[in-house]
Length: 332
Ligand SMILES: *[C@@H]1O[C@H](CO)[C@@H](O)[C@H](O)[C@H]1NC(C)=O
Ligand SMILES: *[C@@H]1O[C@H](CO)[C@@H](O)[C@H](O)[C@H]1NC(C)=O
Ligand SMILES: *[C@@H]1O[C@H](CO)[C@@H](O)[C@H](O)[C@H]1NC(C)=O
Ligand SMILES: *[C@@H]1O[C@H](CO)[C@@H](O)[C@H](O)[C@H]1NC(C)=O
Ligand SMILES: *[C@@H]1O[C@H](CO)[C@@H](O)[C@H](O)[C@H]1NC(C)=O
Ligand SMILES: *[C@@H]1O[C@H](CO)[C@@H](O)[C@H](O)[C@H]1NC(C)=O
Image (cartoon, rainbow, N blue to C red; front, side):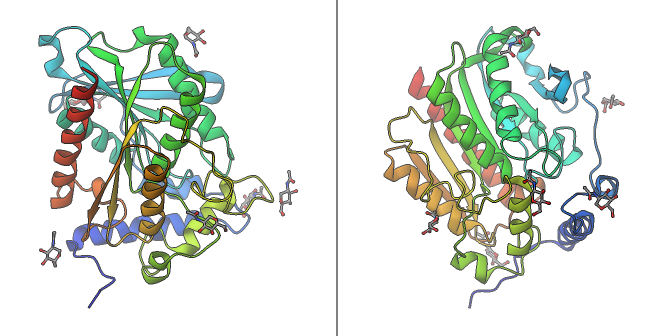
């Protein structure tokens, strides 16, 4: 019968366990984070202008007053190809709106994989974190990076084709990507065109407890106790989890049926407590008349893609390549 233990190599299980223990210990009862403690499990990597495994990187400042910047990853094969030929993937890292950075080694590694496997220019956004910065700081930062790129396209290498942008994120980053997409659909950008949404195990929720939250509540990383805390320190005082940022398809949802919302691919995993919310998000996109597909990996846990050695990660990147190629051929 259904087990609640995913099949994972012991080394990965240990890494996830350590991350969970340290992030729990760094959450203080007065709703602040002990950043120095979390730093013990969150190594950072500087950008690297030397090509490593076919990718080089640099950091670009957007607004120094709030430390808003992004890390740019560029495939090295690009010197041989013509101008404006590669898609641009604008990426928001996960971490419950509270943990990690675009400089975190785990996300630097993942963005290099996106860059190489999709042959895309990747923009990995460094947004402000909760609880020091509550909603809507993260959404404002994401939106402002798109506005900045829209008006300052020359910060990207000339091989980047900004008429073929994808918004992407994992977990809280996928929630961010969704809300940023809604904002830019409403106000229309000048040069950037978002043609696809890559939603990897998006972090949504609500007051209601779903079946998967109850059944998989002993999971590491995103148990109900943890996600409740994360929402509490993100949302403005007095909001509950039916806030539009959380219960995206609920009573306070924004009506997107009239928006030019990008075609979307949603990935979920069988061992992810958030899977019922992810399915609801997908169903809501379809009901709103949007083009969406749902990919379900029955054996995958939350955040599987942080481990390139897992078989799912390979499947994931090849499925994603198909999606990206299809969206590009639709607009060509
Ligand atoms: C899921 O895990 C089980 C147990 O390890 C294995 O037998 C099965 O082949 C896996 N399925 C997929 C699709 O990876
Ligand atoms: C929260 O607790 C920590 C450690 O006890 C303390 O250093 C910090 O000043 C407190 N912050 C607030 C806003 O109360
Ligand atoms: C960049 O990568 C090269 C090759 O791996 C390495 O030798 C160098 O130390 C790296 N530079 C930085 C700033 O990390
Ligand atoms: C574009 O870049 C210029 C120069 O850095 C800056 O002043 C301007 O605010 C940027 N545009 C946006 C929308 O951020
Ligand atoms: C938010 O709630 C906390 C605890 O309930 C309270 O101490 C604080 O004053 C409130 N802040 C605002 C801005 O209402
Ligand atoms: C959102 O909130 C409503 C009311 O609490 C609830 O019925 C619904 O199941 C929640 N979730 C979604 C996805 O609508």
